[in-house]
Length: 163
Image (cartoon, rainbow, N blue to C red; front, side, top):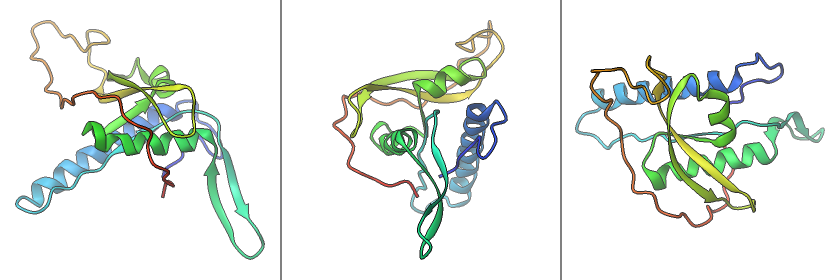
């Protein structure tokens, strides 16, 4: 798990998180190319934006620096959903609202995740925003290839703890 904006927010924390996720996926593609013929390496990244409790948590016998809270739990659930949708990067609506002018995103689904009554809107991050508008529509430019998934209504995700 990575936390952006702690201990001090730089104001563009969601943007930096999405940028880091895109860089990670690019590196995974490079590793896959080097590992041709071996088992495919798949990495799913889930990003959620919101308030967290962060700091040293525990007792004198066992102290751990951690981030906890609903925002962290939802991010973990979103990461788990990357497997179901076969997508590399999924973000929540709160993250989408923070980055929609900087990254090309595609609405995927609205889901209920374990531990929440509210639906969570999911978006796939396709890449950096291209000139020509939100849809990346550069006149005359070829359309960017996209990985596709068949949206289904997922059942609640089993409990998981982010690493």
